[in-house]
Length: 87
Image (cartoon, rainbow, N blue to C red):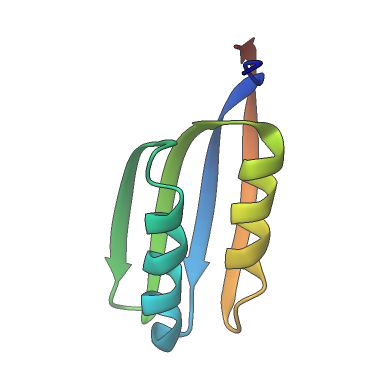
């Protein structure tokens, strides 16, 4: 099997809809083999959650995960990529 180039990235997620939490966790679980780590912060004053996910995966996997999360109602996701590529 040919190895696929991977990228290191951070997916930043803002959750304004608490009902989306279960679906977000489901998506993250689906990609747990690629996730380096994650941090979640509840911002109680604004009633939002802030999540950062560090991931090392093929770019299309990262885009798919961020896209699924970002399409949830009341959820916003942006991705920042490292310039380092690996196989």
